[in-house]
Amino acid sequence: MEYPQDFPKHLHGPVDTLITEAEVEFTKAKKRLRSHRYGNEYAVGRLILRFVKKVFFAFAQQAREAVAEGLWTGERMRSAVDEFLHKLVVVAYHQKDARGGSLLELLESDATRRMEGEVKESSEWVEHQEQLAAILRSQTAPDFVRRPIPKNSGEGDGRSKGPAPLHAEGALKGGNGHGSDPVAAERSALLNAYRADCAKRGIRITDEMIAEAARSSWHDRTPVQRWKRNDPRSKPGDDVAIRRLLQKKPHLNN
Image 1 (cartoon, rainbow, N blue to C red):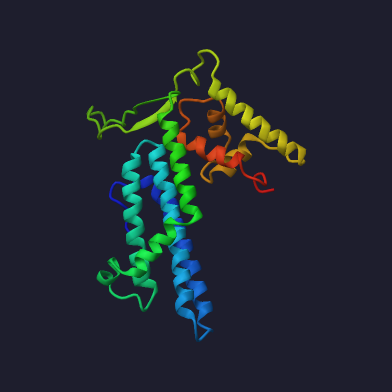
Image 2: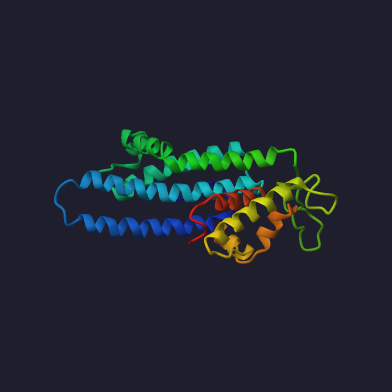
C-alpha cells in the first residue's frame, strides 16, 4: 500500500509495523476458515474489514501526528485519509478476496463503498475525529503561537533545504520562566490527581511510567516533564497523548 507522496517519512515506521501485523493476523484467521465448507464468503469479508481497520487507523494516527507537528494542515490530512482509505479497501478486496474482481471493477463497486461506510461509522472513526479536533483546538488556542522552525542548512553552503514547517512552539506566558503559567498549573494538578488516585489503589506512578504508557516511542520521563511545565518543545500531539492516558481506567497496565 503506497503512502501519499508528502506523508512524512519519519511517520512511516509505526504504520509499516501495523501493516505487517495485520497481514499475519489475516493469514492465520483465513487458514482457520478453510476447515469450514460453507459460509466463508461473509467470514472472509469480516476478516478483510478487520484488516482494513487496523491498517487504516494506524495510518490515521500518524496522519494526526503530522498535523500535530505542523507538517500537514487539517484539510490536507482529511484529504489524505479519505484517499488512503479508498485505495486500501480496493487493494484489500483485490488481493484477499478471490471473488473480488479486477481493480477497475472494485474502484466503484458497492462492496468497497459499503466497507468504507462501515469504517466511517465505527467507534474508532469517532475517536479519530475527536483526537484530531483536540489537536486542532490546541493549535488555535490563544496560549500557543505558531512560528517557523528553521531547517538545517546545507554543508556550509548557507542554502536552506526548503520551507520551514509551522509548529506550535509554546505558550505566550508559560514554559519560558516568566511568571506563573496557568497551563502548567492545570497540567500539574491533573497529573497529581492521577497519581493520588493510583496511590489509593496501591500503585506508585512515575513520570517515566506515564511517558512509556502514553507513547511507545517514549523511553524516558523527558516528554512528560516538558508537557507538565508547558515547555516550548512540547508538541500539541504530546498533550493529546498524555491526557488520553490520564483519562484511562484502569491506570496504565494495572
